[in-house]
Length: 221
Image (cartoon, rainbow, N blue to C red; front, side, top):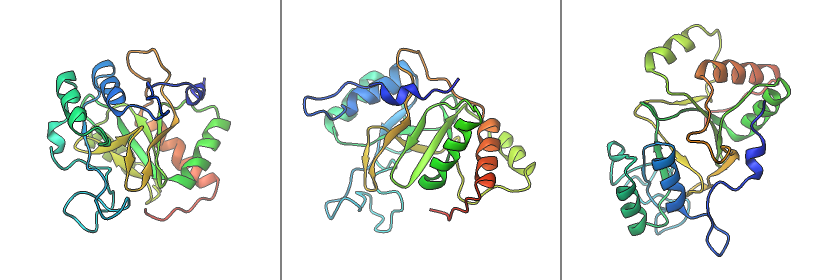
C-alpha cells in the first residue's frame, strides 16, 4: 500500500494568511510523535541565501541548529512553546537517531525519479521531506554499526546519498531556510500516534536499485 494520499491532506493548522504555523508543527512532532526538535538558525540579514550563523560559507543556511545546540533537542511541550514564542520564524530541526526517525537523503531530481520507480514497483514508503535541493526519506532508527554493515555489503552506493543517523539533524516542514521552503513530498497520514517508517535496509536497497536502473548519475550537493 502506498502512502501517497497524505500529500493531499492537511496535517498542520494554518494561519489566516494560509501559511502553516511553525509552533503547531513543532508541537505535533515533539508531543504527539515524540520526535525531539529544536529551532534552527534563521536566514541572515544580508539575504535569504545567507545563514544567520557565523560561518559565511555555510552549506545548509538556516537548516541546522546553532543556539541552542543539537543536544538541546526535546519533546517537552513547554520548551517547544517557549522557543517558538520567542523565535516564531525559526526552522524546525529534527535531531535524528536514538528513538527518533533517521533519514536517507539524495539530490531532488534523482530523488523524484527514484520515488517514481519505487511507486511503480509497489515499494511502501514513509514520510518524505523535500527541500529545493534534496529530498529525505524517513526511516526507522538505525545504529552506525547497522549502517556500516549495510553499506559494506553493497557493491555500489551513490556518492550523492547522505545518511542522517544518531547525532544528525534534518529540517522539517513547514520550515523556511536559506535554500527555500521545506515541504512534505509524502506527508504522514494524520491521526496516527506516530507515522509509520520503513527499515533503512529496504530504503537503501530500493533507492540504489532505482538509481541504477534509471541510469541516474547525481553529483554531490
